[in-house]
Length: 269
Figure (tube, rainbow, N blue to C red):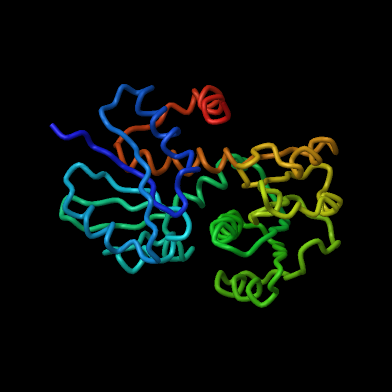
């Protein structure tokens, strides 16, 4: 019997932690299956999708940059959330051969914030990751959203697309206090420009600082936030959270989240 498998596609793809996450859960549950990486170098993943449609062992794939939007027209249907976000990060085949696109980044982002209430949020960056974050904040009823980005026009267009009557500012702008600061940009990542730490001055003492960067995991932003006594959430929280929703669809099982601490040790070894 052919082993069922799922995988993650992107370019580059060697850095992805998804195989380690799904592999850990498959092993922990004793399930027959595997999770691979697939480098898709072309601008469109059309050839990849065509080939996988006829593979009976294929249970679907996660999609990372730069294919989260280019994969959408290749699918037969979109989950309403994925359509609203304008990005797909999970593709699932049905028994009739049709493919459906989902976005698990939205619930993955919000998972570590569940149970909290935020009246205001400052989001830095207006790229693909910001789309999922803005959707999650809008769904959670965050009343006041400020979006900082190098291109103000891009930020304004993104807020308009999501129907958010928010404020747009240049990156690093000082302003009113917020309950939540989220870095969706590459700033602070290895080899990238540093994050403007002065923005921490805008976070209320009871606020949360969330950095979705995973390399390094403990960013300068998170270190500085903890030094100020602020609650923090790192990039692995979103990564593991979104993988949870994808794993359930790929393998029809609930991942053993009670072993998250052990999984984190594997991912950071």
